[in-house]
Image 1 (cartoon, rainbow, N blue to C red):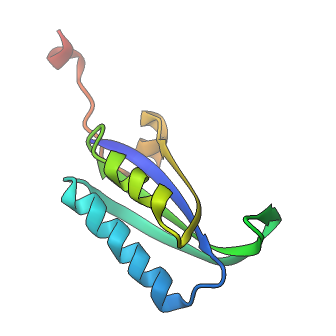
Image 2 (spheres, rainbow, N blue to C red; image 1 turned 120 degrees about the horizontal axis):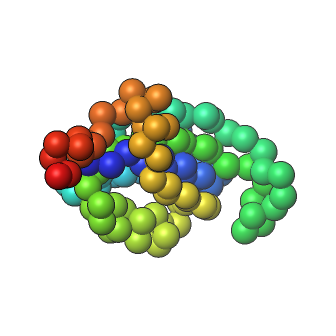
Length: 114
């Protein structure tokens, strides 16, 4: 499994219960793909540095995920189409950063590679 970080910016006009519902949908989507959520960090409402889609603020949430390569493709498509999502960014964490954060990733040892 690989470690990923997903940041999602939700529309600032949404209420807390709607944001919580979308967070639950994201969690269910990751778990249905065989992955898992290591942590969910809710940053709350933040003001944008510049206007995005005629909005001035959004609700930021950062997820740390563990998933197989390609397992998050459907999640990205879902986030791209969701009306509640202003922006999202999914990155694969380098192995050293995943280890620093305590995310368990399977790494091939020299004996397995040979």
